[in-house]
Amino acid sequence: MLKGKTALVTGSTSGIGLGIAKSLAARGANIVLNGFGDHEGPKAEIAAFGTQVAFHGADMSKPAEIEEMMKFAAQQFGRVDVLVNNAGIQHVAKIEDFPIDKWDTVLAINLSSAFHAMRLALPAMKAANWGRIINVSSAHGLVGSAEKSAYVAAKHGLIGLTKVAALETATSGVTCNAICPGWVLTPLVQKQVDAKAAAQNISNEEAKRQLLGEKEPSMQFTTPEELGELAVFFCSPAGNNVRGVAWNMDGGWVAQ
Ligand code: NAD
Image (cartoon, rainbow, N blue to C red; front, side, top):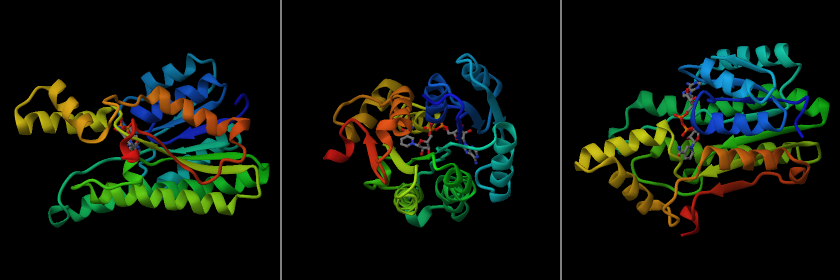
């Protein structure tokens, strides 16, 4: 389905981004990976699908590096057909205690990076009259939680940005939508599980159960593979007229 197309997934050296990259590679897309830490392992995982894979280590908090990454992707594969804005970080503190630099960094990586990647990807998508922009927001793009002001603000903002992009491309073959996961057991959430276990002197399993119990009626983590298949749907012909949605995959979190 995506043979000959190129997907760039930000923050795809681990977790949800890697899951989405694998689902798109399984449908034939060439992949540009991005993120910190080991990238040889993720590259090998993608190459196993028989598609081409490249890596760029742009820091998504830095607009100049995002520009370099987009140029690199165009040089490698001609253009970016599918842009998945997934890179994200979390910081947990009450508003009055929230470090100013952390606020700026969370907003830069979780929100502004998507604006920069989109403004650079859209001209080629519009020229080709085909493109898919998928923004990984969160259940926290739809509802709030205490002590996550920067994250919740960024994720709500990302859904607003998604809607505007969907309107600006509405008469074209380019679509823009958001995915809103609930809890997914990635390194980002494992840190929160570890913090809860340490703070309450409880086991890791009990901390996971409490985390789910607070938010997710299903008492199940959503998986990167499930989110990857939702991204595939947005890229499929059935997704041609799906525009500006914020699709939660969250075990019932925001249904409450
Ligand atoms: P993760 O920590 O496993 O992966 C984050 C990825 O982003 C990694 O590849 C990391 O290297 C990369 N990254 C971090 N800072 C970066 C930077 N400055 N520049 C480039 N890359 C950077 O986290 P995850 O849980 O897979 O999160 C992925 C996205 O999904 C995030 O936007 C997150 O907010 C969102 N999300 C996660 C959950 C969850 O429960 N895990 C729920 C809802 C939404």
